[in-house]
Length: 108
Image 1 (tube, helix red, strand yellow):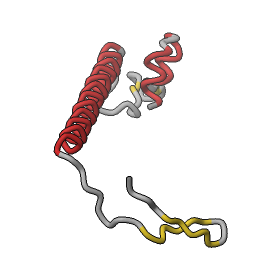
Image 2 (cartoon, rainbow, N blue to C red):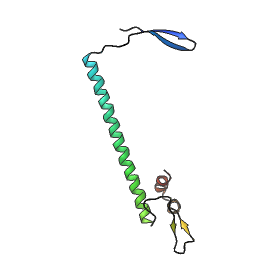
Image 3 (cartoon, one colour):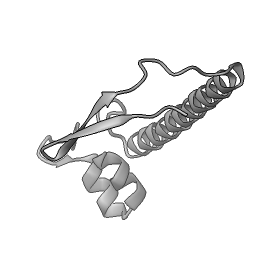
Image 4 (tube, one colour):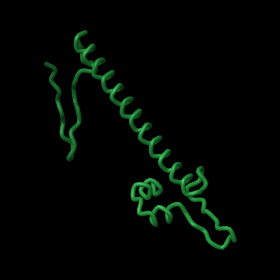
């Protein structure tokens, strides 16, 4: 077992002596590699799920914009009436329809 010595300076502890390197067996190294690979795989799965969720949300917003005749590329662009006097925004339309999921997505 490796012993470490600490010296207290003020409210902090400083490592005084200790090994510069700790030797590991091959089994420990393999276990460490397996853990690292498992974490990397888990992170990749999380990222893939996040990307899939974002794509579904974008599609929902695009469908809402297309259904209500708004510009599908810009959620902040107003829809102008025939005479040009009235403007309607996607957020206002979603509130009028009481579509809370779309309101939440538009505010993101």
